Amino acid sequence: MFNKKVQIKLSKNISQPSIAILKFTQEEYKELECWKGINNELYLIDETTNVELNCQISPYGMGATPEEIETEYNMFILVNNMDLNMDEKVYTFLIMSREKEEVVLPDGHAYNPWAKTTGVFLDNQESNARTIVSIGGKLFTRYLYSHELMKPYYYPLIGPQAKSLIQDGPDDHLHHHGLWWGHDGVNGHQLYHEFRGEGRQSHIKFLAHFGGTVIGQITDVIDWCSAKGERLLKETRTMRIYNLPNEARYIDVCSQLHATDGDVQFSNTKEGGFPFIRVNEQLSVLHTGTITSSTGKKGEKELMGQEADWVDYSGKLLDVDYSGIFLNGVELKDKVPVKTNIDVGIAIFLHPDSDDYPTKWFVRNSGAFTSSNFHFGNGYRLTSGNKYTFKQRIYIHTGSCEESNMAKNYEEYKNPLVAIYKLIAK
Image (cartoon, rainbow, N blue to C red; front, top):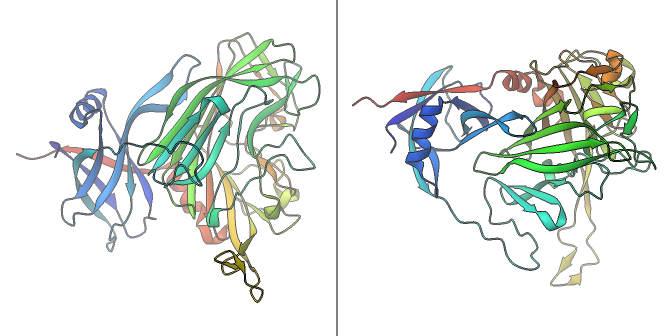
């Protein structure tokens, strides 16, 4: 047991699971890191009920320069399984450590190589130029960064009932890659569509790449180049992924554009987003979907070019239960697949610290949307040596927008639970 405690003020109105954050000084962080040791992991125990909470310390922030990631000394605490029956109470936890389980992925073919992993696990496959992200032993997303691609992107994003809420390369827009970044006029060069003669984004290196019991994080450096290979700017891109259930899961995004090679002029075009999302076709308004904003406006006509703190895309995904169709390899002729619809959604929250806050949104009934589009500001000029920062949270949920307490979840994003660090009385 460590010689300090963690305290968190909780109430019965707190959603569980939630993430609480404890901010350290450098000295406090180094002391705890030294006590923990290299091969151990931390956890917390409620001193009155012995309920255990997963926690994880990290020295990495969300922001970065092209050379290094920003330093932030934090503990991330997964608040779960707490009996919260009071309006408000301060809970006190002891800091404990235990040996970290060694993860050995199976050789050769396996149905699910990550099945025995816990928390957020990152499997970086350099030969395949991709990182597989699993949560609780199941696939969540893949980060695809091959130089053969026009741009790195994330696909899928797995939510309720193991369904992806985004789609890659739909027939109407082959350049829409699930969760992607791009702009169609960067110093006159196109880096959005994928036609002949267009520029591309190239993954250069990872600044952070780790998983853990509470969070995983990918921070990488990306060069934006013209079709002739002339570098136009550098981007640092961070995705922080939390160990939350697929019924209510979120990831934090920080994209920073760095004018490392002179001024960068972003033209006035609607073809751009930092990032863009293309939802699963079934969630589009053309099928079952509804677009809702924090202002109460709905649909493309009401929302396009309007300010909002968040926008949500909710609808129904088809789920097919094939159980009972086969028994010991023999087809059961009297059984038919059971088809049901599940209510799900995906939202983007814009952080007040984002350089484009407040922002005007780009939304399409067909399924594309972004909070970050220079079109509504008549373009943007990023002067040499400066940077521009976008900060968002992507929130995946079960149920409709109204059923998902979107305003409450957005407030948690702006003002997360805060933990306090205290010395144990001798």
